[in-house]
Length: 328
Image (cartoon, rainbow, N blue to C red; front, side):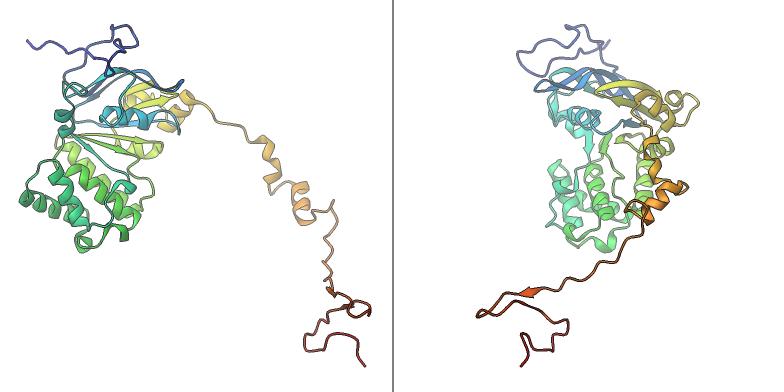
C-alpha cells in the first residue's frame, strides 16, 4: 500500500513546515495538493501557510484582489519560486523532491514578454515542444494542429512581435499545451484579449478539461470564473478564505457578491455628490466656476518689444503685415 508522502521544507536549514512538521499528508488523488505553503519576502508574508487540493480534471480558479498572493502561489506551485516552507505534490509526486518529473506534467503559459518575439508563431511552438523533449517531426505536427485550432494558420509564418495581443496570448497558450501536460496553469489568461480570441481560448480550455486535463487559472473577473470554472478558491492577504466547487463557494449568491462579502474593501462614494448631474449646485459650479458668475472672456495681451535707441517700447501690431515701430 502506498504511504502518503509528507511535505518537506524546500529550503535547507529551515527544517519544519509552519506547523512544526505537523502538516497534513498530501492528497494523492488530487492533481495538485498544497500543504502549509508559506512565502515571506523580507518581513512581508505574501502567502500565509495555505492548504489546498485541486481535483484531477477540474477547471479551478484562484481569485482575489490585486496583491492577494495569487501569482506568488502559482509561481511556487509550478517550481518557479521556492517557498519559505511547506510542500506541493503534483499527482502524488513531491514537487521539490522531483522537480524535473513534475515540470513535465505542467504546462505553464508564459507572459508575452517571455516569448521569443523574433520567431514566427510556428517556430515558437516547435521550439517550445523540443525544449520539453518532443521530437521535431511530432513538434511540427502538433504545432500545425494548434495553429489550426487557434485560427492562426494564416499567421503561422509571421513574427510574433507583429501579432495582436489576442494572437500573442493564443501562441503563449500553445507553448503551454504542446507537450501534452496533465495540468495547465494560466495566470490571467484573458487579460487584454479581444472577445473573439477569448471565445477561442475558452473553447480550447474546455476541451482540454473534458479530456481529463486539469486547468488552474488566476483571475479577478468573477463573471468569467463563474461561467467557466467548476471549482474556485478565494484568496486575500495570502490566505484562503473559501475553497470548493463554484456553487459551494458562492453559497446561493453571485460569485462577485460572495467575493465582496469575504474580501471586503468596498468604499462608499457619498462624498462624490458633486459628480451628480441632478445636483443644481454642482451643475452651476460646472457652468460658472468663478463663484457662480459667468466666466469673462480672456482679453488678448499685446506683447511689447523692448526700447531701441532711446525710443519708448511699442506694441507688436496685430496685423503682421504692418511694419513694426513708429511711423514717419
